[in-house]
Image 1 (cartoon, one colour):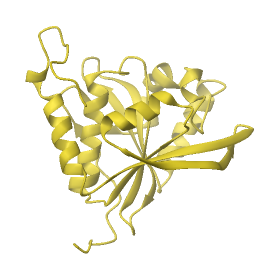
Image 2: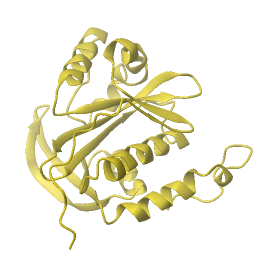
Image 3: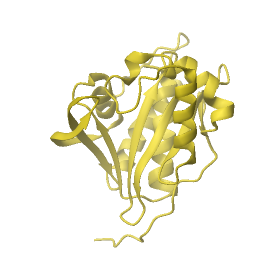
Length: 214
């Protein structure tokens, strides 16, 4: 058994750059308008996640500013390299540097949903967490009712570890939580699978994948 070197450093990268998408540390002034249009104003995206829906743009901006100021969370805006606009958010939350554990969340706008960019963004962030910061465990938690989030977790290579029943009371009702995780020993195989799928040669001239991500 390899004894881990703990604690691990907190995430602090300003930018993680990819071929189709960049992850930029959240700046509410710079990213807020794009994020409002892409996700903040779309109530349906917030029905199965704890925050939102937001009453108006001002309420959404207040939430962004509060999250950006917290020291126990790090948020990244997904920047579509085709347009230069923010189209979604990745959240690194519940950071336990002493245990090398970190949780990831995602809210994705329609323009990046089911795109190569969305998968590349996860790959970039996964590499950062496991390879640069050397964390031991990356979690993904969502409501079992959020089928899109559960499909995304499984597609990215997370393992479902169980359902926590009635572990929260949110938005006036009982809240179950599906717990997924990737651990450090699993990441190399997950990374290879994602890298192979993301390779330019895996896509035809029409942008369609040659081999699916399984």
